[in-house]
Structures are given as C-alpha cells and as structure tokens.
Amino acid sequence: MKTILLVCNAGMSTSMLVKKMQDAAKTMGVEVEISAKSLTEAKKNLGTPDMILLGPQIRYELKNVQAMAPNLPVEAINMQDYGMMNGKKVLEHALKVLG
Image 1 (cartoon, rainbow, N blue to C red):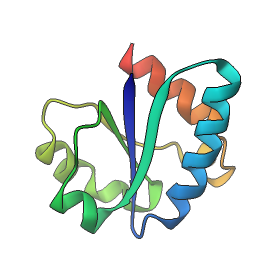
Image 2 (image 1 turned 90 degrees about the vertical axis):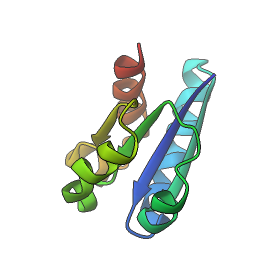
Image 3 (image 1 turned 30 degrees about the horizontal axis):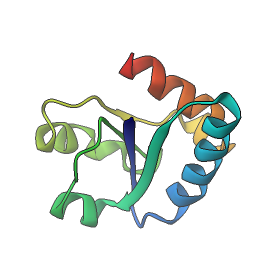
C-alpha cells in the first residue's frame, strides 16, 4: 500500500484535503494511506511515506524537505487544486508520480 504525507504550516488545511483524498481513493477503489503533519512535526519525524506533498503556502520549503527525504518524490500541491480542495485531482497526480 502506498503512503502519502501532506505537509503544511499547521497541518489544519491539509487535514481537510486528506479527507477529500481518502474519499476519492475509496470511490476509485485505490488502497492508499494518506496523512497530514505540520511542517514542524514533519521536520522532527517524517515517518516512512512513499511521497511527500507540500501545501502551496510552504512551497518555499521544497528544497529543504527534498534534502530531508532525498529518496522520495517531494512536490508542492497545485495551488488551484489545493484551493478548491480537489482531493481527486491531487490523488490522481500523486498516484501518477508514484507509478
């Protein structure tokens, strides 16, 4: 099962997106584990995700997070998809990157 970690400033807005992504995964019949952490929490312990997605409000941290997880795909979430809380589109993109 693939695991995706969403990271934002406080972990609040990404928690809403996680729920939308989980709903989309269920509808699509995809088994994936999706969670959210604040940037501070993620810097202490990333865990073992297969991919990390950053909220657009912290895209400036992209290079730092990539350095923390050099063997993982790390990307910023599309700003429009994030703003619209389009969990299906964000999930589809993540699954495409993960193969």
